[in-house]
Image (cartoon, rainbow, N blue to C red; front, top):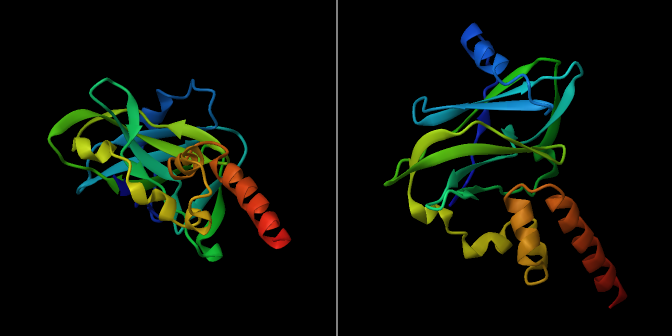
Length: 196
């Protein structure tokens, strides 16, 4: 399991081929649509489209979307094969406006292993989760193993041994309210430390 290192393509301009792919997904009630495409120079292309008539805020960290890759295990269950690591620099966090019907592109690593399966991308934006279409891909089964060191990541390391595993998983696997739940615990921890 690795950290997702997607990068937003600043110079991206949509084209008719990509627009046609999005027309097939227009019926969804979600505000954002994700379409993933297979390898492009060892990376997957992920396109994000604002399907509303209003501008939407897109939250980023160091020019990266809050995005991880998931894959189906041998039992057909979607599991993360990547995790998200928060930055410890306040200047890393930004948001931008995605215009109505606007689109952006990011690239994410395409793994190669001995286990063929389906993969998809999970985006957390404004406390809402969005999933891409699935693609055929190859990974190593070891990528499903959750590393022991996740509690040592920033900002989780601040309260080592005080954070339940479920909160750690919500933060690093981009679950709704993960950061809020962590912040609530952190505030309570600070209050207790001040009293002692």
